[in-house]
Amino acid sequence: MLEYFLYPYAKQFIVFNVLKYITFRSLGAMITALLISMFFGDRFIHLMARTGIGQVIRSEGPRNHIGKKGTPTMGGLLIILSIVASTVLWMDIMNVYVWILLFSLLGFGAIGFSDDYLKLKGKNAKGLKGSYKFVLETVLAIVIIYLLLRYDGLNFTLTFPFFKKLAVNLGWVYFLFVLFVIIGTSNAVNLTDGQDGLAIVPVMTSFGVYAVFAYVLGNVKFSEYLMFTPMPGTGEITTFAAAVIGAALGFLWFNTYPAEIFMGDVGSLGLGGVLGVVAIILKQEILLAVIGGVFVVEALSVITQVISFKLIGKRVFAMAPIHHHFELKGWVEPKITVRFWIISIMLALLGLATLKLR
Image (cartoon, rainbow, N blue to C red; front, side, top):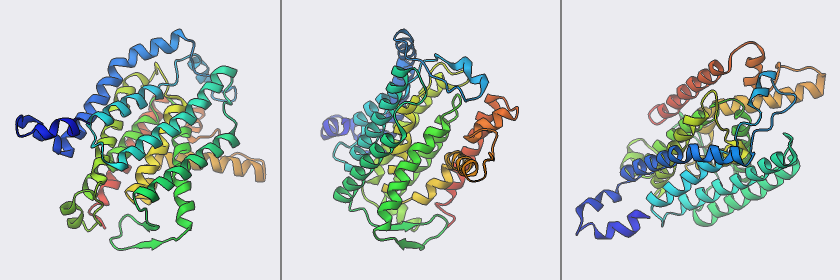
């Protein structure tokens, strides 16, 4: 928005000339989101505490989590507010990609909000019925895919990291694939958000990688040099990704162990859903399984546990998702969290390496 209103005066005020640079506006978005998140963090926590909006703990969860009961939750509202405000302020308001991303963030955030609200209202950890949640996520994902087809001309080709020319046209199957990517990523991030600070750092590292890819793919010279097909307009996604990183970093200040606030489903579903949409826009869906490996493992541990118990009546893990398994094996929560962070950073570096190793 600043670019739209101030850049036309760059000849009179040369300082406004910097607004044409995505790098400058991305840095501005990151700092703005960080400051909003940090400044309003304490106030938001006190508001949630005063209104009695506290975490509901599952009775079947680890016993050491009982002490977390009543901790203010729904911090995802603060994250989303920080992202939306900073993105709108620094983005190119004529860029359709960013508007679709904001819609995706708010849409999945709204589903998560409904889930959180029902949990708090009923004072139980069940929340929105699973089938209802799936239907809402599916409808929203279909609308998002329609918007991408309508305004982006989304093609049905699937590309692969580490390969320069390997691409497969999936035809109509691609529609089902991207539907799975959006819904799957949203719920995978939600499953990962089970310990203090566990999910927010992998979210930051994933968006950090996609920020670089967006900048490269949106720049004709860089994309052609690295043998990617240029994708005009996607560079602006860097601004959105930077805002996510800033908001998440500010939230981590309060969410790190011992957490003063949790993001709730409004945050995890919102961030996960929009992460999947970013991967689809940039045509780097397979890469998401690499840089988001922590989310993949968490989701697979739950799927494996359920299938094993239903088929043979035995559990593969002491408890799923897998971070709870390590808890019951005697690992302290901060150790699990930091080690998962390290893994997410390593996977992010591997993802960045695919820019050249192709």
